[in-house]
Length: 296
Image 1 (cartoon, rainbow, N blue to C red):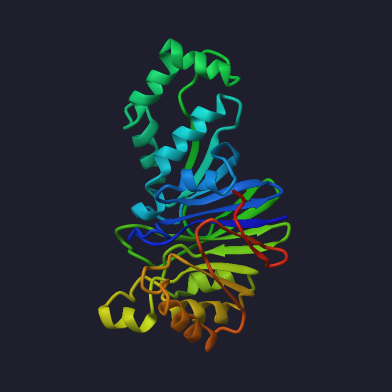
Image 2 (cartoon, one colour; image 1 turned 45 degrees about the horizontal axis):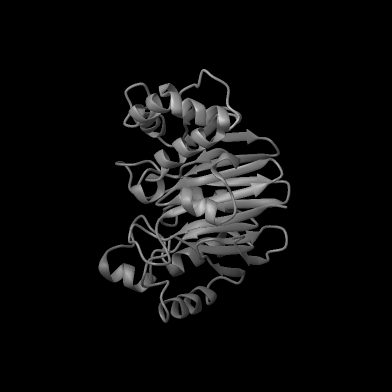
């Protein structure tokens, strides 16, 4: 059974209900995380999952609301895995490799942490009590910068990439299409409507698309470039022939009472498929389309 967990359904603006972006795709070949925004590690556990169950991580881009929990996730997975799990594999646009080295490399920002944990006798005892064998090794990650037009094959799934139009040339951004045994899932990341993402999403079973705000408001305040709002998300989904549209990366206004009702009305005038308003800790079953609360 393929299932998508929405861990982060918000934006850089923290609210009581939403903050940042992070998702997990659970399917027969394992668990894949996409983006690692604020508190993603904690949200993962609240959703009934665990950092050690994640084998692959993909970044859409490196704004902080998509990657700020990366060091926490890396170190938690390494620490709790006690040397008994495979190294994490990470893909993303540049500078994914550089960020990883600067976090956990020999001179990384958290080298002081892993040196203490690998060398102090009490830390070594905790590690052995968790099932590890000495000597304890520093954290190790298989990390690779990738770009548009690539295909990555995993155990029972594959991923295609395309460019997403967001804040180039300062940061590169990618959209991903995951092909699983039960269907296809597109995660747009942050983007305005653009041909590469449309082509990537053609005929997909599900598309998770950013919905920053009411489209009219975005056009009026100058925030429409590089981002999708309500009707841009609807137009992309309709043109691509996507079966289900999941609204993510939703700001405080569009996700509020009143804002979401208007947004859905605008979307449904354009898009004739199923619309799902994401909420944090929601899980969505790909095969049946049934949406459920997360396991707690």
